[in-house]
Amino acid sequence: MSIQTDLQSTIEDMVQKGKGILAADESQPTITKRFKSIGVEPTEENRRAWRSLILTTPHLGDYVSGIILFEETLTQKSDDGTLLPEVAESQGIVPGVKVDKGKIPLVNSPGDLIIQGLDNLGERLKVYKEQGARFAKWREVYPIDTHNPGRLGIEANAEVLARYAAICQSVGIVPIVEPEVLIDGEHTIERCFEVTEAVQHAIYHALHRYSVILEYTILKPSMVVPGKENAPKASPEKVAENTVKQLRRTVPAAVPSINFLSGGQGPEESTANLNAMNANYPNQPWELSFSYGRALQQPALQAWLGKKENVPAAQAALLKRAKLNGAARYGKYTPEMEKE
Ligand code: 5MM
Image (cartoon, rainbow, N blue to C red):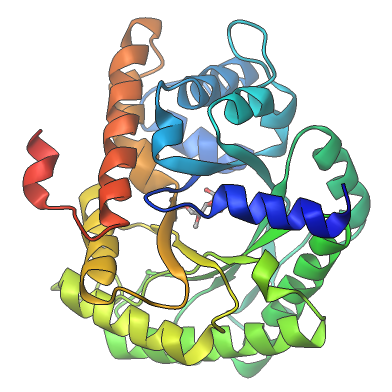
């Protein structure tokens, strides 16, 4: 297959009505934190068991069309000895991989951050592709403060995302471009709007400079919300209004799908917010979907607790969240459905 055909078929498989992406790409420090919250040791075997539980959930492919994996998972196997990327494909779920390598302070831009990992990215991607990955994900992080993100922070992060995306496409891997404007802080929803707009403007300028083909990309942004220390929370209607307005100003119609991160929102909150977007603002140029990590996994983790006998309950909890977010893709979710 040509590179163009690879990119086209991956996008077609990932962007499907009623479905979204599951983020299961926690790095070792992050998964260690998640496991600690349920008293599970962060061993390689426990990580394998957890991710195998996720991928073997019956019918997960009815609501999930792509899964972002951590590189370790690409070579791990399910209990019956099948490689996990193959398990994903057998469920109709496209396997992908997180390729960024952690954040460091951005020199000469106090408070801003930058993500490492561009060195040898092309070589790494070729290996991941042989291991089954068909798309990649790279996250840049933007803390909000009085002077953050600064102009340099916005420009430097956009440049890195664009270089990453161009390298991915050059080897036939679809890039998910993830700018996460952090929810931490006391800022207002208006301030989040202003920052997110500036961040995404810079990213689409940079993607254009690097000749990235937008039709073969997916955007994974944060929603426009007030800071988590700014009570009360905004209603789903207000989050939807601000988020869609901001996206319409910044994201070209050529982008096929926008798959939000949950970024610290609770499971029900993130489902309600996505639902409000699809219910109140149908017929946008792009799909409005999900790429949640915590908001999909948290109830399942709580049900699992690292015990084999809890696997069916954990899989049921995961499938429930996937199904409810599938309903939110159509604007057909109601809080009553949580009780079913
Ligand atoms: C923002 O995090 C991404 C989406 O997850 P949430 O829906 O929980 O916000 C997620 O894909 C993230 O990139 C991974 O969990 C990996 O994070 P680390 O910090 O371990 O690289």
